[in-house]
Image 1 (cartoon, rainbow, N blue to C red):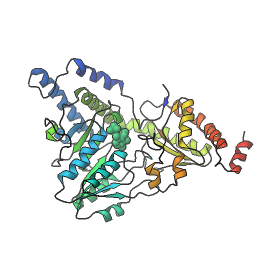
Image 2: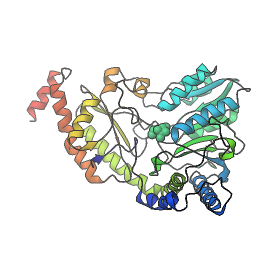
Image 3: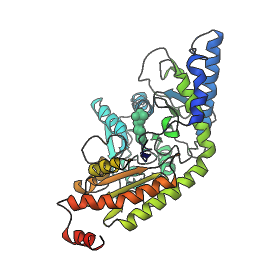
Image 4: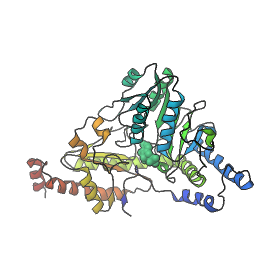
Length: 396
Ligand code: PMP
């Protein structure tokens, strides 16, 4: 196994979660919809798990939680489902320019369906401007969807303020909380967001499970039609083992988050400081303070992020370039472009995302390898200016 620093793309499932799930594959495997005793056992654990997810976001009612197959589905159900439900009130939706690709593509889909979708611009740190958001809202606006944090550069968005504006204007507010849910607590009593996308894997649960939190009274039109499970809003037999794992992961995350986030912040800051201190012409993308505790997103002049990732791969280090979810495309990151970076600047980016299993020695190893590899690639690059090459020669 490599030194794994790509935790925003996938996280390992916690051993405690795996232990909890095992029973529900071949012993207590019944369908919660069945009326027999085994079905009752499945219903019981399904509802207990729902309570744990409700507790994770501090919701007072477990019926506020709908289980889905993951974040993409929750985003679809939350945004398309709410848009369709509110269609008679208006046809305008606001997202930001730097949403996860699943949300950007939902925006395109809704445009084809006759909705008007505005894409809120961000500043050079990747933060939205509240005054610009307010200006975009019209009588036709029915939904705002802005993620709690950028899944690329890690900038945190002012969700409490967005929620306040949305409430004042009578507009629903959906947030994709996937990037931040493992490190920043969600409290719907404190910030009454209407719809929240959650993913199991992002809190060290199994993949293929997620949830949509719906504030009391908020309903969405189903996008999957079938047997009417999940209060009729998401049909299909529930993935009980996955949901049990998700609930256990949520329980652990709630308990351990304060300590874990603190540890991650210390490691992240050590990494950022050392990279910026030791590598000339290196920059931090995203906000210097208002950022995810486990995210460090760098940019290096004169080199390609892809070459850097492959070089790190040779040194047994797993990191990501651009966006953690779609780094196989060679297009520059839409987030970095929206933040005002030039194409060539956006191409030289490296995303290092830390997690529960990250140790200080992993960061030390990266810090040992990275400066030399950046230097090596720059020596090969026709873009590197001669004064920098000369400097490299001097310190050889
Ligand atoms: N939203 C965000 C912020 C993400 O980072 C991701 C990918 N991890 C998704 C949605 C989509 O998740 P999934 O592929 O598990 O459906």
